[in-house]
Image (cartoon, rainbow, N blue to C red; front, side, top):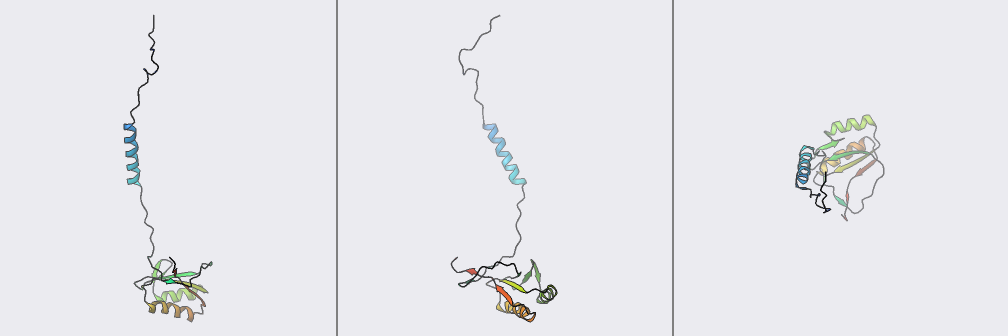
Length: 133
């Protein structure tokens, strides 16, 4: 019995069609994009006022945030001035950092400042942005 040999080297090779492979990869990409959940990071949006004489601080004092609607946030939760005063009195805080939106009223900032001075908190900082930005 005689077997016939192919004389051409490339006669047995066929080109592979990659279109179905690209389709599968594309469908997998769409599936993973649609099934993944995008987490929105909650936060309080404030625009800090600009200052020429701003300094960087290295310590992590207690931070109070005052929004443009004059809502005072302590540890991410809205609080009244009485609640803030009670918290500062209980924890015996010695330094505080105020992040006030540039649209916040000066009256709210001064109210917090007066509470701090009344509780003998002498280290009060106000957050600003650098005027060069």
